[in-house]
Length: 142
Image (cartoon, rainbow, N blue to C red):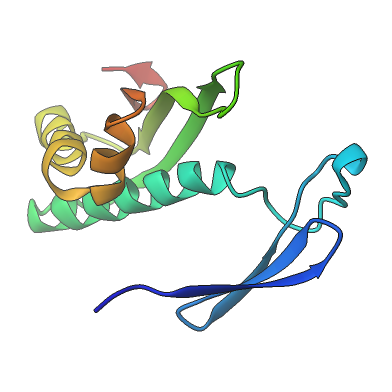
């Protein structure tokens, strides 16, 4: 089934977005372009999509591997090109885990499976960007 979204222009640079029944506003954060920062800018939402896609994969894979009792979050950052069209040439993902006796090999495998096999957002962004990941467990990069 195709995914559809609708954008309705509100005013200035703001649009109301409807995506599969969920509504939110996107806007520019720069007043010189008419923005009022009423919602996120479109390009950074790519980082959210990437983090959400791979994050859901990793949690699902770790559940199947019977890994339990951990906290997990993803931090993302990106660098843009300097000329138009400006795009993210480098994207960094930090997979951050906390917990006792976490199985490093299983966590590494879950991240790898997500980034290389399951996450469609990773696949699309790898066509134009370098994706760099780090796995951090209890404050230490592994």
